[in-house]
Image 1 (cartoon, rainbow, N blue to C red):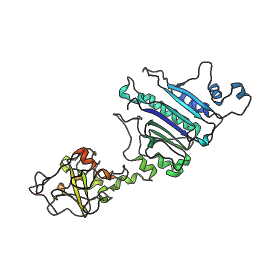
Image 2: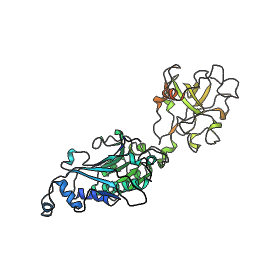
Image 3: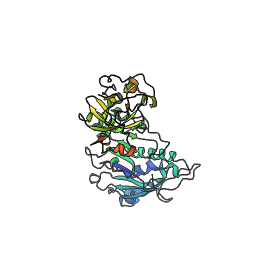
Image 4: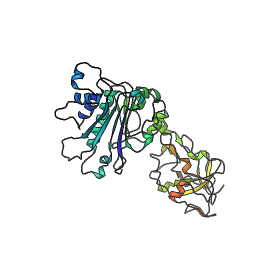
Length: 387
């Protein structure tokens, strides 16, 4: 993550409380952060400044105006590390929250989160940031709140419900009651396959996708699976055992690129071709061959020499139909395109080919094996087994 990355927090709510500003500031001050509250200035005084009135006016019971303004905070934990001071700005737009999707926003540099660029452990700072964001959500009870590393507009709400615009989860999301009603029960959201979920006292659920906001090794992303499918498509853990073979989308005679492994080079052992028994599907970057295949019936055949490659796979993980005569069980390829329904959708557009001379996106990236006519892809087979 380069220096152009930045942190964005959005706290979306409609009802402003009398102590919203103070509550937001306390959420940070109680979790390792310092604010621009000077020695002679209290949190209440900062709130009065943002509300546009003096402490005396506030004490007299005058109705507070909507607060608009900014307060800077920075991580200032006294520990063994010499933390760089990176200032984050909390913006309050409380005058008319109905017209502002996020009356409270947080913005600032994101480079400090890249642990490869620091001389100290950033994990402690990240943990306190998440704790502060949780406390902020407890105080404001938003219908949704997100904490994301930008730019990535797919990961932030762009409108109110139901047109929220969140297609992919950011680093942290707090789903309020209004959002939970649309994506399932609280228990369903708490079971999202991510690094961490937390149940808030307000009834909301905090969903944290990974240990750090950026993808840098080592990285702990929690359980495998697609949290977006779990949340937004109503899938459950049972869908781990329902498989998707994208090559079912091919029409009879159509071409595509299949990235395949043979049994000898697969990173696991199995007794038969049954995807549901594999301990883990192969890494998408691991393959023996990148082959142009053509669909005929429920089977895929190499398009250059007509050799059998594999059968299409049903939702239960079992190949459909019988092997062609002359093909032993250990000479059917495993496709890395096959996924469980719980994972991201297989990108079929990356596999499609319009002709033998027009490689797919994957073939352009990975290269493609063109097996000469009359020869077999298998080293120990003299001639190909064709239909």
